Image (cartoon, rainbow, N blue to C red; front, side, top):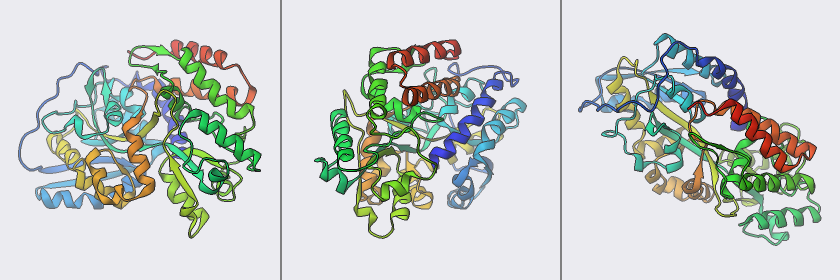
Length: 421
């Protein structure tokens, strides 16, 4: 489950990021000029590091690239997610990087600031091909240092029978709808009308969509504003579900899916990986009992965009071939084939025109949501700021700390950390 994976990775990354500044490379980022890539087919060996399922599947998948580029060979090294951040940091320090590596979107600023990443060549990679929110995760100080490979975003999973009984057969469309639906579900006997993550690692991914939808920024490349009125209102809204008992303050690990299937939970926020988990847990026909709605709107209905990027290193031994491999992985038809192989959602917008994705009613919602989704800016201190944010959100949800106090505390802690600019 990706939330669990993220929690482990974020904890490791936070520890490692505190030491990365002293890794031995000159700091950089944002002061580079992208170089062109030589024309013609790729040649030579291309070393690639990839994590998780991607690391297990990419070598076999890349054989088609070698068919198109017979003088090129892709050597993929699978890297466990919980070791990836330190492995990349160590490779940068020793100037022993691969040609290409997956880069977690929240690591982009940290690694780009070391000066180790090669700016994205605009003659080969076109910005407008990608979802804007995904492309923004590659930007550090106005320069792109990678390419979005795959994406994910969040929506509202809801039980259709319970939502219909609550008067919302098509799910909630606004903040008021979401509160009203959850309230009515609880009145109808549902234990949790709307499950929300009550703090802990990664909870910012559930909170920030409400903040962004209310016009708050929280953080930009050079400014922190977690204590804005818009952020405070969003925090108060998030807290309201716990205050009114519509969301539980504790839920045992592994209880979300069975409790949703049994009807104890009426709705929750999550990403596309939960489609398969629910179908597996609910058994045959359960895919007809739930639906996904876009994030409910306030000023907007903005969600979080995650996923992973691909970056080429300045110390790459085969830089041009590395970029050609990245460009090949970014072709719309290759993105669709990669989705069919490992279920990673395409970062390239036109890939979603393929019936494999556009014909799936669940994926269609996520594809539309990706048009209004964003991530925090790629700043080197984000992992540290996020850890403080998650801690204060847990107090907000479980201890009824005032939302304004929470916003002020987050701002104070984030200010002490800084943006790393």
